[in-house]
Image (cartoon, rainbow, N blue to C red):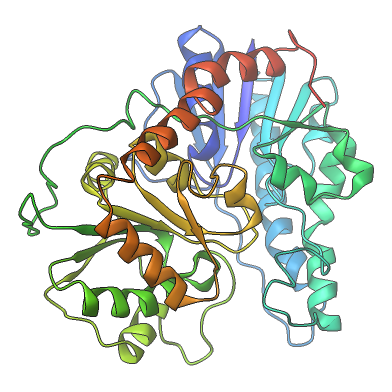
Amino acid sequence: MNVLFVHPNYPAQFRHIARVLAQKKHRVLFITANGRKDWNIPGVTRLVYKPSSPPKQEGDVFTELRQPEAHAASVLRSCMNMQRRGFVPDIVYGASGWGVTWFLRDVYPKARLAGYFEWFYSPDSADTRFDGTEPTLGSRVNLRLRNTVMTNDLLACDLCITPSLWQKSQFPAIWQDKLTVLHDGIDTSYFCPEKGPLGIPGLELADETPVITYATRGMEPYRGFPQFMQALGMVLDRHPTAHAVIAGEERVCYGRPREDGKSWKEFMLSQVKLPPDRVHFVGSLPYNLYRQLLRRSSVHVYLTRPFVLSWSLLESMACGCLVVASNTGPVREAIRDGENGLLCDFFTPRALAKTILRALDQQEALQPLRQAARQTIVSRYELGDVLPRLEALLLGRAKPAR
């Protein structure tokens, strides 16, 4: 069969299924805006488009539609070019919400169209109202516009996939019956416990050194970075031998940047006194070093608003980390407090610090939580179990579970 994947990032959530379908001799193409050459999937042809930069106009209430519109137009041109070259997909799997899927039903009316649905925005959602603020009229308009493409896709798609029950629950009730919950899967043969050196260039820590780890794409409030930094100051003050290793980029992936132009890392370092010789910012790590960081972790901290759950939490659990996480909806789907991890209040750095210190001081007593964390991933998110189910759904060999 001819299979087309569409996602502005490459390979993102489609990495494993694209590889499997290519290995089975399906003809697989991937349309993306990501032209980086460090990712390559054997048998998958990548077609890179460049979305135009929409002009910013003061007072334009449709700003939230401009970027999806630019992606949609670029993908439409790519699809039409492929048709002229003789490629017509039997199956299309696209990431909804970005704009890339907007016109796929129109250009491929006979294809089996599948959509990957991450988040439905709402002024009344747990995320929007998490900090107790009332959405303004402007923010309500923006949130409604952000759902434009997704609502279109919910109507157009033959198959609608979302990765968690929590994320499904955030969609309007009228759409929930159309959504099938199926996570992308975690490769537990790769993300597994194993002792070894940290391996990060320029960072040497003795084997007996307690290591607090935090891994994120961007250092931002959505992932509790300010609260983590506040708690870290208390922890390092009371635990003089512990070190913190923070992986991630100094940017905002979710939410808005600071209005003063500072990064959250820069701001928090100006607010919290930390011993510079015991706090190590290591940037974005390649997979092998990221995995080694998780394996070396004494306590792994994961915080999130009631939003999309990060792969990093599940990968850390697969590596047998002792996880201290926020007591928020998406986390509670994976972690049960005191059974396979420790939960604490997102907004209370003092409670977070207390929980981290408990985890540092009770390493042996809390060892069963590490084992239970890994077992949770093996039993519920194992890639080897997920991929056959996803393949059967995409190829129309299995009916979606509601």
